[in-house]
Length: 75
Image (cartoon, rainbow, N blue to C red; front, side, top):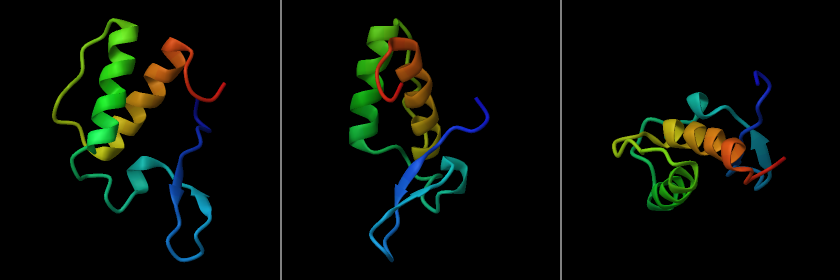
């Protein structure tokens, strides 16, 4: 789906902005512990493996993919 929405907290106005993970300033940093935990949960439910060295942006995309596959997340 080309028009996927990504939400990242906007620190200036404390609102939510829609931003693609590839555009995140910290997207190339290692995934967070929370992302890793949730990714492993989803991957287990989807009977898939998980790459351990994903960036925040890569993990976000994989989480969205697995949410769709498992029926979790926004519908």
